[in-house]
Image (cartoon, rainbow, N blue to C red):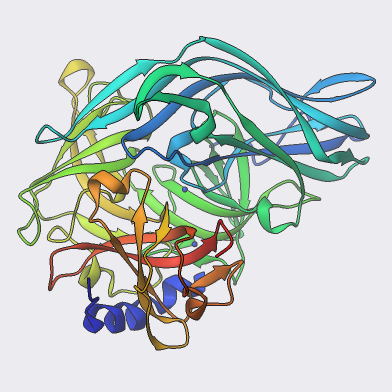
Length: 468
């Protein structure tokens, strides 16, 4: 498919800001840090499955410990429920705990009640099916390639990567329900490139009068301090002055190794009405280019948990009336509405819905006020001969997506590259050449080409997963 230069040039100009920038309470990040201990933070991510219909792998993580010859110490304070499939290659902050100094050579992860969710696209609109994973409990110990060295008063981390392709068992291409939880775990330096926190969401609980820090309650009930500075990017209409205790925010950044606060590189406001639901768009009615009056979203997270309005783990319908504000996450330009609005909603987009809850109990309803397009990760094989170069890294290429986009997005999927696209393990767009194919992970935004009506991905980063 020949990519139209018009959208490539238009997005290349309008999305410069995207590519140059980014998922009342105590101001103390953690109250139980022991002065003589070191501290270990834990990030979660996933390696995506090779079967396209799976949209979730929801599991209760009951414990994470670091181990050495002297015994085991916990780095997870409380049981947490995590949908690993929603991370799409992004890094989610799980916990931060004090650990006695030492060298730890392995990590043990325990959990239970895994549930696999997958889409049935033979129906219109698509329906969600689930299978309870068996066995229902697991205990997995992973040896660390490089030991985790914890020093007094220092901060180090663990990246817990669930390999979904190895975990979810299939037969003849069909999910069987049998699971073999397979984790890749590695130690992180606090200032390492893999220690970045992506899209950490929570409700604002306290705002400092210095206009630099605020407190937020994270998805697991813990209060974190977020520090901003002149380099922090504020997405869309967000600003420090716009924060209230009704705001639900999306923060990217890294943990400060001294204060343990989150040093924010990006802050976006998902809701100003104390409610947000986030997930994957599965159906839009009517479809583009008509103004949408309804969007169906597979809800993967929400704050607070309001079951009658938008139960987590289900496909929920959200009514739109055209008065909503449309934003692109990690975007610092007022031209957002030219690229994303109610005429360019489409299946396969990662969305955050913010609004106001009306009524109570079973009669609760939601009035949508904000719809934010969020970045997402997709994997696939490069289509031989598809690379088009306009200048430098500005141009396009295509991938055959082996993940969820394989059933919700066009095949092959066109990817737009700009001068600010970050290439990992590749010298740039020109490196996408040869007899191929080879596997890539692309992180970016799913937008609609208004000339063709087709979804295309604007890339923030392109990572080579296999050697060409």
